[in-house]
Length: 88
Image (tube, rainbow, N blue to C red):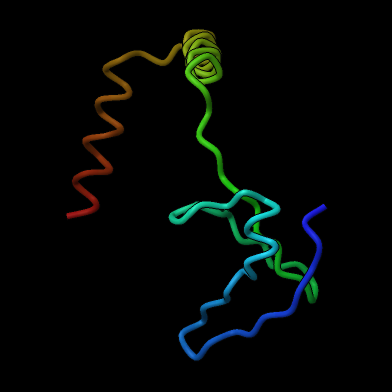
């Protein structure tokens, strides 16, 4: 367990994660989080990129699902082009 400590919200909306918590959770500079606000709680969940094996498995699942749905490469290219046109 990481323990607990108190901290404050700055005028810029920043919160310092206390050193003892950072050390216990082995958090590094630049670590990414997803932030969840629920009732009166703010939850920070670390984001970890998938391992190479996990990524390959996800890609295999996506390809299989796309094949079942009848999605073609041309469909994907068309969707990307449409989004790029909208973002200009």
